[in-house]
Amino acid sequence: MKGKTMKIGELALLGQTQVETVRYYEREGLLPQAPRSEGNYRIYGPEHVERLSFVRHCRSLDMTLDEIRMLLRFKDEPQADCGEVNALLDEHIGHVAARIRELRQLERQLKALREQCGGVRGAEHCGILNQLAQASSVTGVRPASAHVQGVHGGRGRQGKGSSPG
Image 1 (cartoon, rainbow, N blue to C red):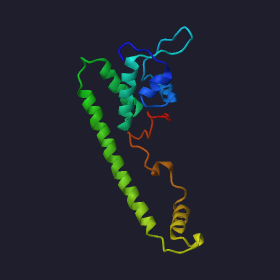
Image 2: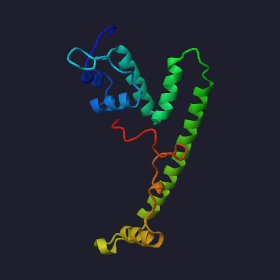
Image 3: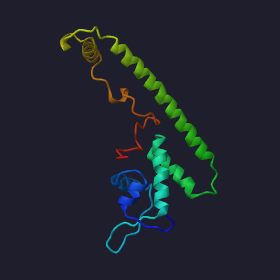
Image 4: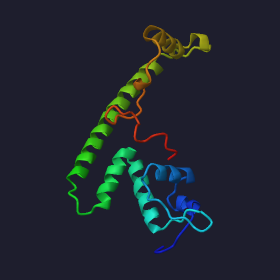
């Protein structure tokens, strides 16, 4: 693959991602700008494949784009002290642990709700639907933050954006 150039579709295929995700990562500064051909096509090389693979692996570990940017800065400066990399990972581990706790609480709530089913045949007498309706009328509509979405320092999924990948 050394020296091989490719268009965006080939890069996306090698990176096991969508073309739009490659473009998104470019806009977010996670991939270096690709030079353009005479026909104005972006031309990618092995360094883009390696970088895209790194980003995709970090995303698979549920890291935010901001966390990945920081890791890439260290990756681009191999002589830098990696103490901050350890600190970033420790913080991310804390986020994951908090998310696991929230998911366990959610599981308990859902199991308790499931126990409301009395085996009735009509939806109008469904214990689950009645419990949901009663809970929403007493407490009002639950805030979006009540749903487990991510726990990165109160930023929700910020840094992840609405990335397609």
